[in-house]
Image (cartoon, rainbow, N blue to C red; front, top):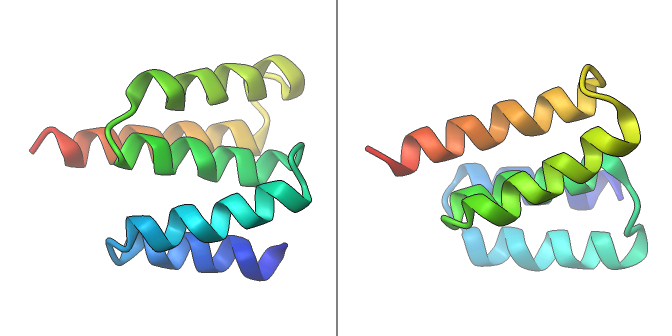
Length: 88
């Protein structure tokens, strides 16, 4: 799973959204409740322009982990950056 997460992050960072989506989907299929994968899913959704879905994933994570959990904070920061980039 760690390799899949790294691949998804790398592909997202290099603008390969389809590749990031594919790798992340495979990882989430293997571990659908993995919080870090879910946070990365929120970031990907934001990069794709699906703000509502990104925040829905973050709300679910916050409800299960708590607002201050590092994974929740990672996801929130990533979503904010993705949405800010999209608005330029």
